[in-house]
Image (cartoon, rainbow over all chains, first blue to last red; front, side, top):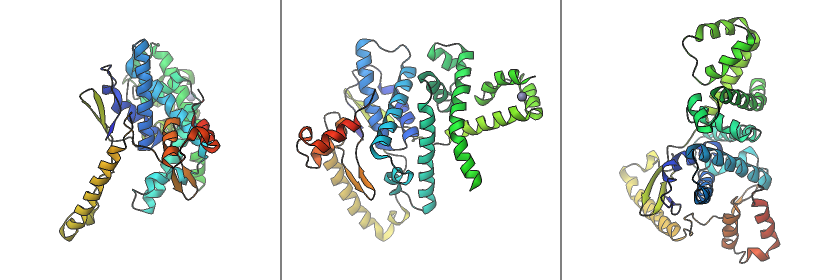
Length: 177
Length: 166
Ligand SMILES: [Zn+2]
């Protein structure tokens, strides 16, 4: 159980589960995800003190993804971790070698996906996450971002293409082994 | 349908929004054009792979007075192993629970002003795992008896490395 301060009645509460969810999915570690929630909450507070975001969910998705990418970069810079070391904190809770192998593989996959997301613009990143993880329609994403539906589709295809280029290396390795 | 028209429908297809009216033409082009078929298959595989990353069980958030509380247990944290579920092991389980409760109280006492437990430096086989945000790192260093991180070169260096670039 973690208490993250006073939301000052500005509505952060209703989105916390989503912020945590985006961060957890891409970071894979509970405490990293919580760090992001806390950080995003502070930024949200600061933003609301100036002006409340018109599209809170869109704002939070963008800021959260940026923080996730920053955190990944910091971690890579500090530790240059091996995939096995990355997965270590979760290994203690696992039971079988297959389980451990799966977690290490997921960690490597997270690395590939976040590295690809890092290459995208804020908008492209938001679009692909909204489509893939939030199951939003193109029309909903377009409204949230204030863009034309056709523009959102173009961003989506570019984003998928960038992630695919990164994953292709992994697929080639999988197929050769 | 040519390859350019196909591109237009590709986003719809990948986004699960291909209309019933467009589907036959889309599928006909898939069947006859190898290049577009590869494009579609690899893009679909990309989306499926991204979706396969497990998310958390939805975190439960509630308000207590003017504080925000997240029930943030990882999905698998509290699963009780079969050998602790009953019979002669109940006694052992109750001791464990007592220890856990003690730890929880201890951890609760160590909550910081922003409500995060004090982070630690953890010795691992291949190095030291450190918190990544400057503030938690600062707390971790104090906790690890670097009494004044501002005066330790190593600590300053670590904190500088943890500082966000942007
Ligand atoms: Zn074609």
